[in-house]
Image (cartoon, rainbow, N blue to C red):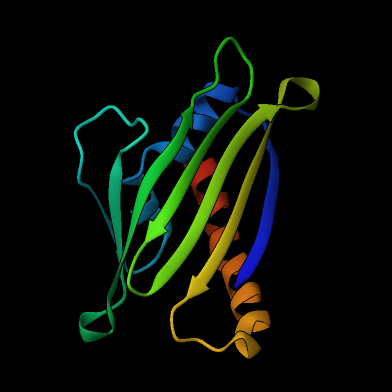
Length: 146
């Protein structure tokens, strides 16, 4: 099992940072070789389910996720979303959070616990480094792209 935390401070209003992080189809544009399908009707709420399909051909896998906490920011305050992964390959959870930051900026946190079924724990350091790089790039792309 791998745990990691990514943090960014961005020159965006909290509501805009939240929107960029939680419009699930946008994640497909930020993660190479990935499609995202939302399986429940909008708007996002607790119980929303979506699937990220990653890979090429027979090397593809589904990463189904369910929103279990949905606390959008209100009146410039913090917001938090928790996703639970229910896949055959990828298990765990992720939390996305936005908070007021210094100088009118927004502090963004992406925390994740990740387990890849069948992968020995001896490979956790490699999975952690790879996950931090991939999700860090994803986070940067989501926050930079309107």
